[in-house]
Every structure is written in structure tokens, then in C-alpha cells.
Length: 300
Image 1: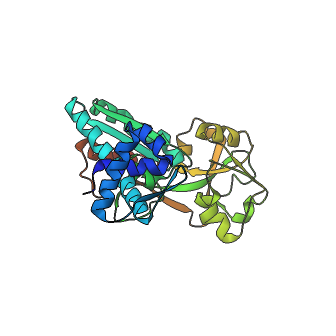
Image 2 (image 1 turned 90 degrees about the vertical axis):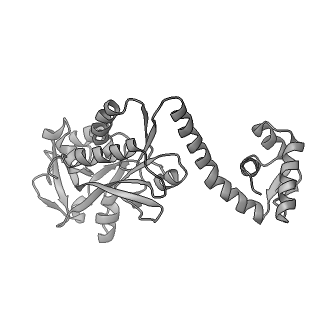
Image 3 (image 1 turned 180 degrees about the vertical axis):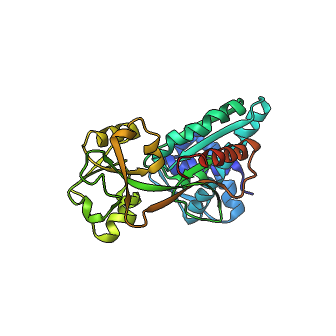
């Protein structure tokens, strides 16, 4: 009874708000659009939308259909793209979403050999600081989620890649650089430099400062890892990053790492995939490659 075209129509009606705009976006006439929806309403025995002047308002049933469309239409598009790639001789595409902002350099170590091993697979890495990783994974916007903070759901399968420690990074000349362990009170007069992420999502706040009622003198944000480390090396502030990232940095001699608290902030990097999907061989190979590279990270 419910066809794909019905889902597309209800989705465009919700997004555009008028019959005219929805019909133009779908390349349909208004009469064809109205006829299709009236036929579905007749079959379902319920109204899906009503007019409010020129605007279209979805009913409760229409909203339920819209939510179904939001889930299914991306899956249709994803599968059609895969079929096209197979038909044209391509193996497929791998879209990676990153929630571990300092992990880009590590990811390059995985992507580089993968591109050689799978020349017919397109790879796209999406790194955004307002990135909704799980939503993007469920919505088929990405195929693989790289995250240090997994939300364990039945709909997502996570593979642990490697463990690491989040540490305070200071300039080598800093008065705290000789200490092995840092307390929250030690940062009261410091400028903390982080990525532009909500403080509640930053480990140094959620697992170190906030539980102890601690704070910093100033909180500054910088988007790129390279510039962030340059600022710290120049004595402009301190930051918190994975220890292996500092050990591999060209600025390593100008920086020092200290443990955040007696037990430190221990983290693990995960790769997440949709649990209901049958993973293509190249995606499985990418995960296996990531695990082998991860285990070679310094001091792991």
C-alpha cells in the first residue's frame, strides 16, 4: 500500500511546506502529487495532511509516515548507489565519520595502505566538530564511525581498535612539566586550549575538572591539531591529547606530558558499523587493517 513515491512526497511536503514547492522539487504536477496522496489516504482510511492557507500541515499520521520516510529513503539511496557502483565495475565507497578529532594523523596510516590494496573503493573522511556520528551512521550518511566515546546500542556494532591515555600537554619550560601527575587545582590559573567542542564532551572537563569542581583561568578553542600544538609549544596554554599523538609530533622535544590524576584518563578507540548490515569485504578489511595499525601505536 505504501510506496516509495508516497514516502518521497510526504518528505518533500514536510521539508518545503507547500504543494507548489514540493511538486517542483519532485518534478511533478500539483494534481499528480495530490492524486497520489489522496489515493493513499483512501486506502489507509486516514488523513495525512491538511491545508493552512498555502502551507501544508501534516497530521499525526502524516508525521508518522514522515519519520518512516526519514529512515527508509536514505537506505534506498544507499543501496541504489551500491548497485550502480557494482554495475559500473567499482567495488564501492567507504565514508568514515570521525568523532576523535586528534586521530586524523593515525587514520592516515590506515587509509594509505587501504587505498593501495583497494584501488576501486572510494574513501571519504568526514571530520566535523558538530558531527552527530550515530545519527549519520543510522542515516547512511557514513559507513564507519571512529569514536572514543561509543554509545552502545543494539543497532551498532563496535570493534575496539586500541587503548590510549589522554594526558595534559605542556610546554617543556612550564613549571608543572616536571610533575608526573597533575591535580585539578593545578590548572586554576592556566589557559586551556581545546578543539571547539562542547566542554561536556571533553574528557578533561567531564572526567577531570568538573567532578572535582575545578576550573581554568581561560578556555580557548582551536580547530587544527597542528596549530594547537604550536600554541602550547610557544607557551600560550596547555591542552589534553592522546599521549601517542605527542610522541609522534615534530614538536615532541618542546612538549611534556603529565598524567591527569593518579589513575589518568584511560580511553579506547572504537570503530562502529550498522549491526544489521552485511559488511562488504573491503569494510571488513579496513577494520582489520585499523586494528593492526592501532596495535603498533607507541607505548600501547
